[in-house]
Length: 71
Image 1 (cartoon, one colour):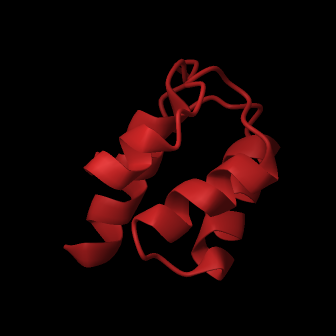
Image 2 (cartoon, one colour):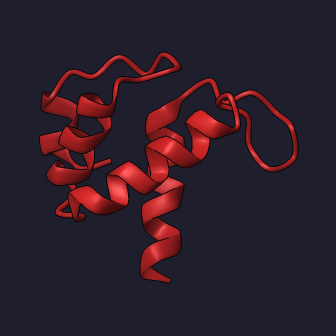
């Protein structure tokens, strides 16, 4: 996570609000449309990952999401 994102002082608790996700993705310079895809994907899965494990830290999940976009 970059320093700008740390300064946003987000709670890592799940579930985040759409606005928190959008602001975080914006801090990473990722389009807001991708933030919405991330948010609604995990919202639709009740904040569980693909293997059925509950997501406890949405920022870590968002960082993984962005990394996968870039690689």
